[in-house]
Length: 127
Length: 180
Image (cartoon, rainbow over all chains, first blue to last red; front, side, top):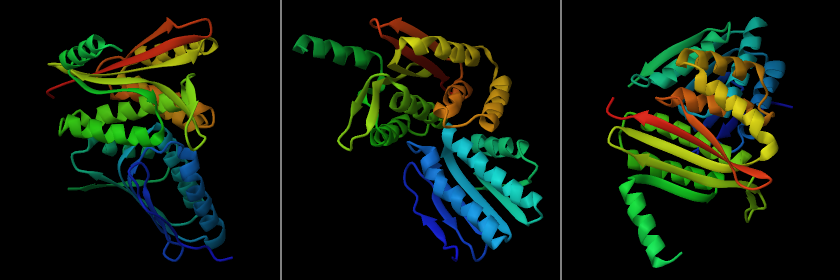
């Protein structure tokens, strides 16, 4: 079965997510503090795993978050670990971490993820 | 409540410069609404993001871990408690309170003590270590408490008061310096 694109519209407490199997582009935007982060992120990680095992293609992942709570942070790390694993298996994986230029917390949390991973995270400031 | 009690509560909350006071079930919709109200009342204050982050962790603690629970209309089991945000001349404070089972007090007290005594760099290291090595299925991995301590400008205060034979009342108190 062909892997379909995955879209979720952002809400106040959940991210806008776009996962495209044609281009390998994945984007995550907004704020994340759902009641149950595991439940929210489960279909996303499932899709990414399917992409990795079926499409086996390159990935460009963009994260543009304004706020995320502690349990979302754990789920984001799970996603990064999947991406790292894909990279280790010889695939091209580019990860961009976007932060508003004066937002030190989001900038630091990007660096915190980078510290936990062998995968490079590109830090990109926006106005 | 008599009119006199209500007037006293009004005077007290005015004097205390209460930005937000909520007592009841903390379901996710309530959390989102209160969080938006809090953000708008804090305006553009530089601490607004940190205060909001602590509010979310404390509100989720009520939702998930309070021992006082009710069924809402959707049949979900929702924790209840109290949360107060105050403004003073030189700081903001958030306090939250909820019932916990007496058997749970010892381990909760140990987790609180741990985050109270660590400096910012050690809190960061502890957060990264727990995030990597623990599972969210084990009730949030205790990450929330570490975030509360990391975002606060002073070490958070924790207290337990005996409520009855089964429950204790657990309070968390966090402060943020103003004017930075």
